[in-house]
Length: 262
Image (cartoon, rainbow, N blue to C red):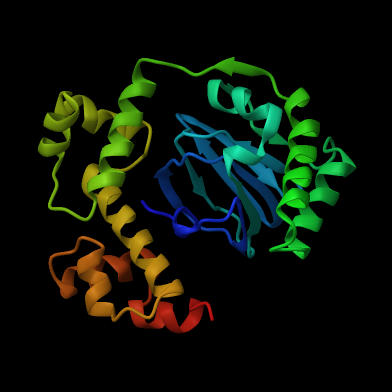
Protein backbone atom coordinates (compact mmCIF):
# COMPACT_ATOMS: atom_id res chain seq x y z
CA UNK A 1 0.00 0.00 0.00
CA UNK A 2 1.24 3.48 -0.84
CA UNK A 3 -0.43 5.99 1.48
CA UNK A 4 -1.03 9.50 0.19
CA UNK A 5 1.21 10.97 2.86
CA UNK A 6 4.19 9.08 1.39
CA UNK A 7 3.92 11.34 -1.65
CA UNK A 8 4.17 14.54 0.39
CA UNK A 9 7.48 16.32 0.79
CA UNK A 10 6.64 18.05 4.09
CA UNK A 11 8.21 16.99 7.38
CA UNK A 12 4.80 16.64 8.98
CA UNK A 13 1.50 15.35 7.64
CA UNK A 14 -1.75 15.45 9.64
CA UNK A 15 -5.14 14.01 8.72
CA UNK A 16 -8.35 13.77 10.74
CA UNK A 17 -10.61 11.10 9.28
CA UNK A 18 -13.20 8.43 9.91
CA UNK A 19 -11.67 5.23 11.22
CA UNK A 20 -12.08 2.12 9.11
CA UNK A 21 -10.55 -1.28 8.49
CA UNK A 22 -7.03 -0.90 7.14
CA UNK A 23 -4.88 -3.89 6.12
CA UNK A 24 -1.35 -4.57 7.43
CA UNK A 25 1.14 -2.01 6.19
CA UNK A 26 4.22 -0.10 7.30
CA UNK A 27 6.16 3.06 6.54
CA UNK A 28 9.40 4.75 7.48
CA UNK A 29 7.81 7.46 9.61
CA UNK A 30 6.30 7.14 13.09
CA UNK A 31 2.50 7.23 13.17
CA UNK A 32 0.80 9.08 16.04
CA UNK A 33 -2.87 8.25 16.61
CA UNK A 34 -5.34 10.19 18.76
CA UNK A 35 -8.87 8.76 18.88
CA UNK A 36 -11.45 11.54 18.70
CA UNK A 37 -14.62 9.48 18.59
CA UNK A 38 -15.74 5.88 19.02
CA UNK A 39 -13.13 3.14 19.32
CA UNK A 40 -10.26 1.70 17.31
CA UNK A 41 -8.45 -1.64 17.38
CA UNK A 42 -4.76 -1.24 16.61
CA UNK A 43 -3.11 -4.45 15.43
CA UNK A 44 0.64 -4.96 15.70
CA UNK A 45 2.04 -8.38 14.77
CA UNK A 46 -0.39 -10.86 16.37
CA UNK A 47 -1.59 -8.47 19.09
CA UNK A 48 -4.55 -6.11 19.17
CA UNK A 49 -4.64 -2.99 21.34
CA UNK A 50 -8.03 -1.47 22.09
CA UNK A 51 -8.32 2.33 21.91
CA UNK A 52 -11.14 4.46 23.30
CA UNK A 53 -11.98 8.11 22.67
CA UNK A 54 -9.16 10.24 24.08
CA UNK A 55 -6.54 7.47 23.93
CA UNK A 56 -3.22 8.01 22.18
CA UNK A 57 -0.70 5.65 20.56
CA UNK A 58 2.54 5.71 18.62
CA UNK A 59 3.37 3.17 15.93
CA UNK A 60 7.14 3.13 15.62
CA UNK A 61 8.77 3.32 12.13
CA UNK A 62 8.87 0.19 9.98
CA UNK A 63 6.42 -1.58 12.28
CA UNK A 64 3.73 -3.61 10.54
CA UNK A 65 0.33 -2.51 11.80
CA UNK A 66 -3.32 -2.56 10.82
CA UNK A 67 -6.68 -1.31 12.06
CA UNK A 68 -10.11 -2.76 12.80
CA UNK A 69 -13.26 -0.89 13.81
CA UNK A 70 -16.04 -2.71 15.67
CA UNK A 71 -17.83 0.25 17.25
CA UNK A 72 -21.46 0.63 16.08
CA UNK A 73 -21.13 4.42 16.25
CA UNK A 74 -19.03 6.65 14.04
CA UNK A 75 -15.35 6.32 14.88
CA UNK A 76 -12.67 8.82 13.95
CA UNK A 77 -9.06 9.59 14.78
CA UNK A 78 -6.35 12.13 14.16
CA UNK A 79 -3.27 10.69 12.45
CA UNK A 80 0.07 12.51 12.60
CA UNK A 81 3.07 11.45 10.52
CA UNK A 82 6.29 13.30 11.47
CA UNK A 83 9.46 12.70 9.50
CA UNK A 84 12.20 11.04 11.53
CA UNK A 85 14.34 14.10 10.87
CA UNK A 86 12.20 16.21 13.21
CA UNK A 87 12.06 13.71 16.10
CA UNK A 88 15.41 14.92 17.44
CA UNK A 89 16.91 12.95 20.32
CA UNK A 90 14.19 10.28 20.02
CA UNK A 91 15.17 9.13 16.53
CA UNK A 92 17.48 6.37 17.75
CA UNK A 93 14.86 4.88 20.11
CA UNK A 94 12.17 5.02 17.44
CA UNK A 95 14.34 3.05 15.02
CA UNK A 96 15.79 0.43 17.35
CA UNK A 97 12.95 -0.38 19.73
CA UNK A 98 9.19 -0.92 19.95
CA UNK A 99 6.84 -0.50 22.93
CA UNK A 100 5.26 -3.58 24.48
CA UNK A 101 2.01 -1.62 24.54
CA UNK A 102 1.84 1.45 22.25
CA UNK A 103 -1.41 2.81 23.74
CA UNK A 104 -1.56 5.50 26.41
CA UNK A 105 -5.04 5.91 27.88
CA UNK A 106 -6.65 9.31 27.96
CA UNK A 107 -6.68 9.17 31.76
CA UNK A 108 -2.91 8.66 31.91
CA UNK A 109 -2.00 11.03 29.10
CA UNK A 110 -0.16 14.18 30.11
CA UNK A 111 -2.00 17.40 29.30
CA UNK A 112 0.99 18.58 27.23
CA UNK A 113 0.38 15.75 24.75
CA UNK A 114 -3.23 16.71 24.08
CA UNK A 115 -2.38 20.41 23.89
CA UNK A 116 0.42 19.73 21.38
CA UNK A 117 -1.88 17.52 19.26
CA UNK A 118 -4.62 20.16 19.17
CA UNK A 119 -2.14 22.90 18.33
CA UNK A 120 -0.62 20.89 15.48
CA UNK A 121 -4.05 20.22 13.99
CA UNK A 122 -5.22 23.83 14.36
CA UNK A 123 -2.04 25.36 12.98
CA UNK A 124 -1.32 23.22 9.92
CA UNK A 125 1.44 24.50 7.62
CA UNK A 126 2.88 26.58 10.44
CA UNK A 127 6.57 27.28 11.01
CA UNK A 128 8.58 24.01 10.66
CA UNK A 129 10.55 24.86 13.80
CA UNK A 130 7.31 25.14 15.78
CA UNK A 131 6.04 21.85 14.32
CA UNK A 132 9.26 20.15 15.33
CA UNK A 133 9.00 21.55 18.85
CA UNK A 134 5.46 20.22 19.35
CA UNK A 135 6.36 16.80 17.95
CA UNK A 136 9.25 16.56 20.38
CA UNK A 137 7.02 17.67 23.27
CA UNK A 138 4.68 14.76 22.46
CA UNK A 139 7.55 12.29 22.25
CA UNK A 140 9.18 13.70 25.37
CA UNK A 141 6.03 13.02 27.40
CA UNK A 142 5.24 9.64 25.81
CA UNK A 143 8.57 7.84 25.62
CA UNK A 144 9.16 7.61 29.40
CA UNK A 145 5.74 5.95 29.73
CA UNK A 146 6.62 3.12 27.36
CA UNK A 147 8.29 -0.16 28.25
CA UNK A 148 10.55 -0.56 25.24
CA UNK A 149 12.00 -3.77 23.85
CA UNK A 150 14.30 -4.51 20.95
CA UNK A 151 12.69 -5.33 17.63
CA UNK A 152 11.94 -9.02 17.17
CA UNK A 153 13.54 -11.25 14.56
CA UNK A 154 12.34 -14.61 13.22
CA UNK A 155 8.73 -14.54 12.07
CA UNK A 156 8.81 -10.75 12.30
CA UNK A 157 11.45 -10.70 9.57
CA UNK A 158 9.31 -12.95 7.39
CA UNK A 159 6.25 -10.73 7.87
CA UNK A 160 8.38 -7.68 7.09
CA UNK A 161 9.55 -9.25 3.82
CA UNK A 162 6.00 -10.27 2.91
CA UNK A 163 4.55 -6.81 3.48
CA UNK A 164 7.49 -5.09 1.80
CA UNK A 165 7.18 -7.26 -1.30
CA UNK A 166 3.43 -6.76 -1.68
CA UNK A 167 3.76 -3.02 -1.07
CA UNK A 168 6.33 -2.80 -3.87
CA UNK A 169 4.59 -5.11 -6.36
CA UNK A 170 0.82 -4.98 -5.73
CA UNK A 171 0.27 -3.21 -9.06
CA UNK A 172 1.76 -6.21 -10.87
CA UNK A 173 0.36 -9.65 -11.64
CA UNK A 174 1.63 -11.43 -8.51
CA UNK A 175 0.63 -14.63 -6.75
CA UNK A 176 1.41 -16.48 -3.54
CA UNK A 177 3.85 -18.66 -5.50
CA UNK A 178 5.68 -15.60 -6.85
CA UNK A 179 5.78 -14.04 -3.40
CA UNK A 180 7.22 -17.20 -1.84
CA UNK A 181 9.87 -17.56 -4.55
CA UNK A 182 10.86 -13.89 -4.37
CA UNK A 183 11.43 -13.82 -0.61
CA UNK A 184 12.81 -17.36 -0.35
CA UNK A 185 10.02 -18.87 1.75
CA UNK A 186 7.64 -21.82 1.64
CA UNK A 187 4.25 -20.81 0.28
CA UNK A 188 2.43 -22.96 2.84
CA UNK A 189 4.26 -21.12 5.64
CA UNK A 190 3.24 -17.82 4.07
CA UNK A 191 -0.35 -18.98 3.82
CA UNK A 192 -0.36 -19.79 7.55
CA UNK A 193 1.04 -16.34 8.36
CA UNK A 194 -1.68 -14.62 6.32
CA UNK A 195 -4.29 -16.69 8.17
CA UNK A 196 -2.93 -16.40 11.73
CA UNK A 197 -1.49 -12.87 11.70
CA UNK A 198 -3.49 -11.01 9.05
CA UNK A 199 -6.71 -13.04 9.46
CA UNK A 200 -7.17 -13.24 5.70
CA UNK A 201 -5.73 -15.05 2.69
CA UNK A 202 -3.20 -13.81 0.14
CA UNK A 203 -5.72 -12.84 -2.55
CA UNK A 204 -7.89 -10.90 -0.12
CA UNK A 205 -4.84 -9.14 1.29
CA UNK A 206 -3.62 -8.23 -2.20
CA UNK A 207 -7.04 -6.86 -3.14
CA UNK A 208 -7.14 -4.79 0.05
CA UNK A 209 -3.82 -3.17 -0.87
CA UNK A 210 -5.08 -2.43 -4.37
CA UNK A 211 -8.42 -1.06 -3.23
CA UNK A 212 -6.87 1.17 -0.57
CA UNK A 213 -4.50 2.59 -3.17
CA UNK A 214 -7.47 3.13 -5.50
CA UNK A 215 -9.35 4.91 -2.71
CA UNK A 216 -6.49 7.36 -2.24
CA UNK A 217 -6.62 8.19 -5.95
CA UNK A 218 -10.40 8.52 -5.86
CA UNK A 219 -10.13 10.95 -2.94
CA UNK A 220 -7.12 13.01 -3.94
CA UNK A 221 -6.89 12.93 -7.74
CA UNK A 222 -9.02 13.58 -10.81
CA UNK A 223 -7.85 10.45 -12.64
CA UNK A 224 -10.62 8.65 -14.54
CA UNK A 225 -11.89 5.57 -12.75
CA UNK A 226 -10.87 3.35 -15.67
CA UNK A 227 -7.27 4.53 -15.24
CA UNK A 228 -7.40 4.09 -11.46
CA UNK A 229 -8.54 0.51 -11.94
CA UNK A 230 -5.46 -0.34 -14.02
CA UNK A 231 -3.08 1.77 -11.92
CA UNK A 232 -4.14 -0.16 -8.82
CA UNK A 233 -3.27 -3.49 -10.44
CA UNK A 234 -6.67 -4.82 -11.52
CA UNK A 235 -6.85 -6.49 -14.90
CA UNK A 236 -10.47 -5.57 -15.60
CA UNK A 237 -12.99 -2.91 -14.63
CA UNK A 238 -15.50 -5.62 -13.80
CA UNK A 239 -13.21 -7.23 -11.20
CA UNK A 240 -12.34 -3.83 -9.75
CA UNK A 241 -16.01 -2.87 -9.37
CA UNK A 242 -16.89 -6.23 -7.80
CA UNK A 243 -14.08 -6.16 -5.23
CA UNK A 244 -14.74 -2.50 -4.44
CA UNK A 245 -18.45 -3.19 -3.91
CA UNK A 246 -17.66 -6.11 -1.61
CA UNK A 247 -15.36 -3.96 0.55
CA UNK A 248 -17.24 -0.64 0.66
CA UNK A 249 -20.80 -1.57 -0.35
CA UNK A 250 -20.81 1.19 -2.96
CA UNK A 251 -19.36 1.79 -6.41
CA UNK A 252 -16.03 3.58 -6.95
CA UNK A 253 -17.95 6.53 -8.42
CA UNK A 254 -20.20 6.77 -5.37
CA UNK A 255 -17.11 6.62 -3.14
CA UNK A 256 -15.50 9.50 -5.04
CA UNK A 257 -18.67 11.58 -4.86
CA UNK A 258 -18.83 11.07 -1.10
CA UNK A 259 -15.17 11.42 -0.09
CA UNK A 260 -13.44 13.48 -2.80
CA UNK A 261 -11.12 16.10 -1.23
CA UNK A 262 -11.24 19.55 -2.76
